[in-house]
Image: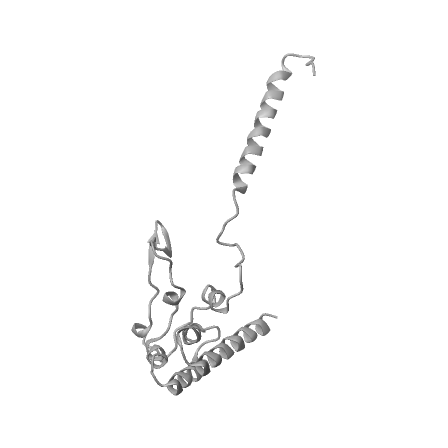
Length: 167
């Protein structure tokens, strides 16, 4: 293309340069896909429930907050008041992040399966909706099949209730 006037050269050069910079900025903004949001390779009710944002229960009126187990392995980051996972050489255990009040943790660790089942029933009656951390702990850490089966039934009931309320 031949320019009719030499004064048009800076205009075309400026336009080409600005378009190149816009393209470069657009491509740099895309970046690689985040591995955090990648779908899991298999469906695991324990992992999906533990990673759910609605898992953390609200404190009960009769509960002593000093009896609750705090989340471990978090440190504040910069000006952000939220906690970020602390760097660690070992992989984090999802069971460590569960919030389980001391009174139910004691009953769930009882050697008697009847006491553990009664603790699950008591939790379901008095806990806020979506508070399934003790149920997850009971499912994952019990060797008694009756306790595991009842914990899974209660988790599924809570999920069904949440799905019904969302519609």
